[in-house]
Length: 86
Image 1: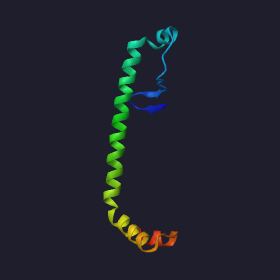
Image 2: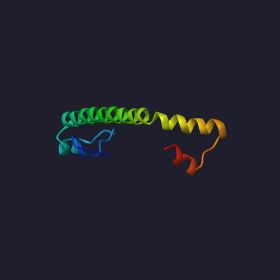
Image 3: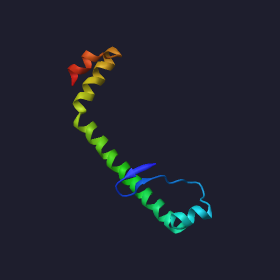
Image 4: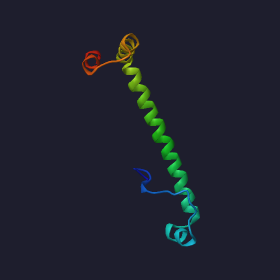
């Protein structure tokens, strides 16, 4: 179930559609086109969010290193210590 700007609010099932469902949805060809669009949109969203995540990790590397150092030394970190490193 997704709500992308390109696909819209759709539920694309991998189950076979009955002939009546195919007729109501515009046929099997339209279903295949929609599935291809959905697959492309999923790929786009995953790539975009992967880049976003890597960017956040890179930008905050110094904080992550400081937290890792505390964890290596103490094996735990409390909220106050965590807030000091940020």
